[in-house]
Length: 452
Image 1: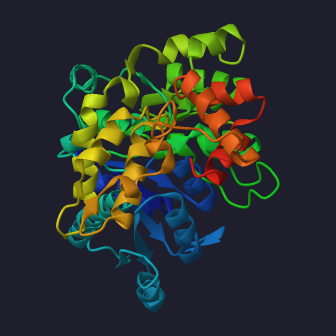
Image 2: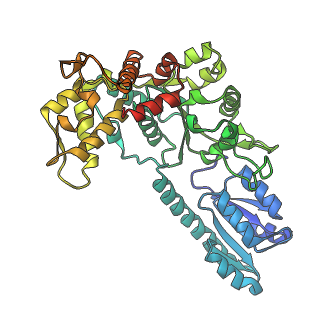
């Protein structure tokens, strides 16, 4: 639902029609939008279609206990503020409910002046709670975050320029680049500079979605939609309303879900699993992939229509081996973050030469991991060659220029062969797995087992 930035959306739940009319009349203003429901069923249907800041809820409803219903609302809506309506005989229940999350209560007959004060106070309290939650979850991007894009190479300056141009718009953005190149960092920067920067950034790696649960995670579901769906749940699309949805590894989505996502992008509506009603949303989409989506389209593994829809504006992130001049700056940045208030760590000249000579198949993520290892092994805060992994100390001729031994272990042979294949395909681990005849999971496991 699209509203003015300061609009307060209020749901009034009361079985007495006269009270609903009274509250709607008294609370409606240029800043407040009022929706009413006469029972629990209508209220639950309302929160699945709309997003509310405050709910004014009668304790006694014909089809539910208001305090129990309050718990349902709290599960469904982030930082929802609930004001209970009660008669004098139920005041003790209302006070007890405040211990479990109710914001306040009002008694019948109403003091209308106090009612407005309570609603405004509840709204402000909800705003503070949402901000604290989003900050703790890392969903809210700090606008003073430019240091996250580190480096001043021509490639990085071009990326900064593109992000600055596209951020204020609402067009979808496709970020391409190898695994570990920092695509999520650029997505956060793009969101932070957009007009939605104070709203949620919802992030999901599509490779982690279980095939049978993809639809319910994206679209949410209604109670009873499938076995085990004991309660209705919002999906990623509902959570991202008014903000940004960043879908990493978009090439991992199944073709069927790709078609559903295309409809959402075109209509800005979706239907939760098991629901007959469409929900309207306002979402900015950012996608990322380490795959060649044109090639995936040609092979029938990715929807051509979706590709053209999400490829309105693309940003390519070069691998670290093609912007090695940024390595010293990245090293300094990572070590500054890892010092934890102690004297900053330094890197010896020989160690830095090794860092500059290495091709970094794991890109910036791998460099970060190497720096973490270096900090652990450093002596007197100095990271030397002995603090670096073996693969950084090896040259193309063998081990530091020394001829390779005539015989070696099968484990070392396998490790070296895997690394050569990864280097041959410029760090694309999906292609490497295909050449090696193994799955990506098996490749990742072998790399982990071999310490790569």
